[in-house]
Length: 571
Ligand code: SF4
Image (cartoon, rainbow, N blue to C red):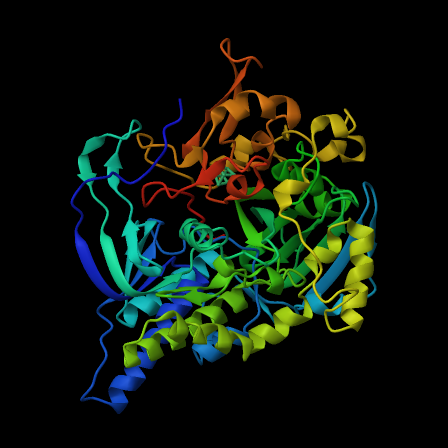
């Protein structure tokens, strides 16, 4: 039986008043907090008789420590950091500056190096970073600036009064598997706020509540996502240079899927590597963790990793949809920033600089709202106007149709990408139509039984243990931990569908797309299919793939008890 995690009802909750609550302590949330603090400092120096307080500005972060849930490649475009914090390069944990770049197209056995880097993908001069260490450092700056960061607190529910967001409710702690209070029970807070900034990362759970409540995607392209599965390796010296970037397209994905890999040379012979699989593939048997294992076995990559050691693992989704897949950015009492809103350039595979800039612009709007004591939709919509007037719009406008051009496969995608390059991002249509990724999945009886050319990426990776790994071995290196005795935070709204229709129609793709082995089909005697779904929620790395890619849309990811989740140390 699966229990739904939800907040307890009918209990007294502590109330807290806030001016601004930022939900999520990633790059967007931290940049928002820091910029707001800077503006308040400036204001208080100019107007000492009418000071503004920072005391009631809070960042909520569900991880035990700042940065623990942050995962990315990552190569940082420094543009927004230059605007946020002059002199930051001297202090920030920057692992290497990009000096060498190469781009390959892979077939099963061969690799073809492009004569030059495609211009949008050039990274020369950008910085290889560990996003986990970078966010930790940014969080220290926020705390030094006098802003309170509550770690181990998830935003569980939006507080609403009519069409106005009035804050968030933090998670109840100390509830057992059956939904009963344990001896350490502590109710969540009602954190009443004048402005709530949602900076939860891709597919944020409060953002999803907001989207559903106000139908925010009406008349817009749906958001589409990719899942990046990453490993961190130590390799023998001289294999991948510090500051070296290697990108590949092609194998093991076929021309029907969209995706590609990265390999970044970092400090101390560390190499960040991973494969991003777009979550709009048609074959439900595709397993993105296996895609990464197969890619590592390619001669070009296996040679670079020989004699090395995998030391960390993780996975996270990213919003691919671009400009036309962004929801309204603000309304009555709320703003959405970073990956939650879709601030990511999928053509460059980069979002950190956009997340930071979006957080800064939201902070400027929040500051202006605080000064005028006006938190109406009309006031907060100035955030959207400032995004439109910024370089964010210039950058995302150029790639506004990029991912949608690949909906019919790699070859037509390359054609559209070339055309869009020549037409300033337009291509054949002003707005390319898009479809939510899960709607593109096909029934098993519409696909070749043996997987055809996709065979190498179907089903779970076995892994030999040196170069390639099975999911549980990889998962061990994510440092994931949760309180075991709590309600499942993966809410399956109708398990009958899993145990009957999905078995025959899609073969239970949750077992494949989840990179952490959370979903398993067990033998059963009391279901018509002889199978029933079993969950291992403690394994979850909070990537949100199941919430996005389930073909029946019956899985909802809700935050587990704050503090649980992966520990992406150095990722
Ligand atoms: Fe990702 Fe869902 Fe699996 Fe958790 S259960 S790791 S959110 S796919």
